Image (tube, rainbow, N blue to C red):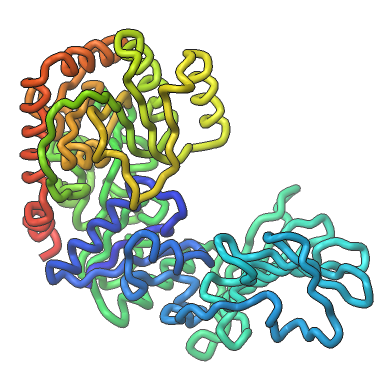
Length: 495
C-alpha cells in the first residue's frame, strides 16, 4: 500500500494537491494501490472529493476515521425535518435562502444556516443563551449528519470542540484555553478508542498516532507532500519506506542554490532526531543534484515527475489572439507582470485578449490586480475567470504567459503544452530546458521584464510557420510527459 499524506482536499487547491490527485490516480490505474491520508477536519470533504473526480474509497481523513464515518453515504437532511427540533414546541421561520430562525414562544433562540450549494439542507445551527449570545454551534457534514459541536468562552472564543460519531457520542474533544491573552487549542483527546482515552498536546501528535494506526493495519510506503506533515511521517513506526516530495524550489536563493536550504525544508531533506526519509524526491534531476550537494542525511535524493498529461493536437495560429494564464493568482506567480506584458502586446494588437483563470491568493491581491487592469485601461481586454477544474480555457488559447521568477517545475505550463499551446515564460531554473525549450515549444525570456516578454509574444504572433512548429513541439513534449513515462520513473522509487 502507498499512502499519500496531505492536509486536505481544499475547495481551492494548490499545485501540491493537484500533483497528489494525479499521482493517486496514476498509481491506482497502474496496479500500485494508493490512498490519500488527510489531516485537516473538513465537513465538506465528501463534496470536494467528488468535485475533483476522486473516489471516496481512495481518501481517508483522520477525523472521519476516528468518528467512524469514512464509509458513510450521503443522506440529505432537511432543516425542517430535524429530530432535534420538535415542531410541536418550536417553530422554524424562514428568513431567506441562506438561513432560518428557530423560535420558541415567539422568541428567537437559534439560527439554522443552509448548507452551501444546497436548497433547504442543514449546514450549521447556532443556539443562543438568555443574553442572545451564541452558546452552542453545531456543524453538519455534507453527507447529512451532525459532525462537530462547539461551545464558547464568555468572550465568544471557542472553549471546546467535539467531533461526533454517528450515534452522537464524542470521538475527539479539543480543549481551547487561555495562553497569555490568547485562546488556543491546548489538548486533543481521543475518546473511547479501543476501550480507552488518549491525550495529545497537538493535532500533529494525533495525526502521527493516526498514521501509525493505519500502518499497523496495512504496512506501506508513506509520501509526505507538505512540509507541515514531515514530522508526522518521519515518526511512522515500521513503515516500508518514507518519502518526502518537494514541489517547490527549496533553496534560500533560487538563483544561487549554494547559499543553502530554506529552514522549512531542512527537516524534509535532513530529517529530525536521528530519523531520515528514505527518499527525498524533486521534480527535476538538476534540482536533485543541487540538493544532494547540500544534504547531510543519508536519504537517497532523486527525481520523479510532479505530474503527467495526455497530449492533444497541435494547432495553427488563428485570427483571434487569446493569451492566457491558468493557475493560482498569487504574488509569487507575478500575475501583475503578466498583465503589464499584455499591455505592451495590446498596444500593438488592440484585438488581443488576456484571460486569467484561477483563484486569488487573497482579497487584497485580487483588488491589486483589478486596480492594475483599470489603471492600464484594459477592462475590456482582460478577463478574470473563476477556477474550475472541469472548464479550463486552454483549448481556445493562443499562447500561455508565465512571469514567475521561480518554479519547481510548472504543472500549469505542462498542461498548456498538452493543449498545443506554446509557452512564453521568464527564464527560470528547472523550467528552462527541462520543460520549456527555446524554439521547440516556446521561449524562455532571459531579460525578465514585461517588455521583453511582450516583444517575444509579438514576434511569435507574426510568424504562422514558427507558431505551428512550436505547437507541434508542445505536443511532443506532452507525449514525453505521459502517464506511462511518469510511472516508469516512480516505479524505480516505490517498487
